[in-house]
Amino acid sequence: MSAPAGGERVLVVDDEKDIVALVAYHLAKGGYRVSTASTGAEALQAAREERPALVVLDLMLPGMSGFDVLEQLRAAENTREVAVLMLTARREEADRIRGLSLGADDYLSKPFSPQELVLRVGAILRRLAAAGTAASDALTIGPIEIDRSAHRVKIDGAEIELTATEFKLLLTLAERRGRVQGRAHLLETVWDAAPDIQTRTVDMHIQRLRTKLGVASDLIETVRGFGYRLRSPSARAS
Image: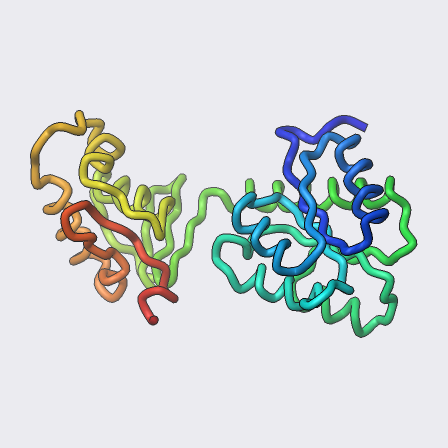
């Protein structure tokens, strides 16, 4: 079996040391970079800090169940896209249905074949990669829909007209949403200008962009003295 491209990181979460060691060994042998956690709290912290491609998650954990961990992974913006393979000794159909309904990508019962687990991990990651490639041209943030390949933007389904520079500015903010973008950085990225150029070009374009975005204009937040940030709709509503 060939190693996965890039050696994706997999987080193994289980309070049974023998299980963790077995799974980690076979995943590492399959070419994955492996990290481990033995509690739900450790799992959530590791997922936030390491951003694994996939989490192998046991249901029966001390203090916090695997279901709780899965719910929190799916609720947080920076971990909601992480793939999850549930690994558990509980075979009841209700547990399997609950796990899948909460957003698990697959479900494997103990005892299990380590080789099958590695194959399932690979299958999940390939499926998600294929889906990501198909959707890579589309970016949606609340009412804003951006089509990268067609250079089109829609607000609540209605297309708006942007100049090439306005489109690039919006796309830059959207791709880095939630993170403040300094004016100097935007000048370099959007206008290919040297960062020491003093100009209000960015501010004027932001003002025009906000006007064209209409109901979505307040998603672009001014960070006084530094630059701009595109907020998520949830941040706007809070």
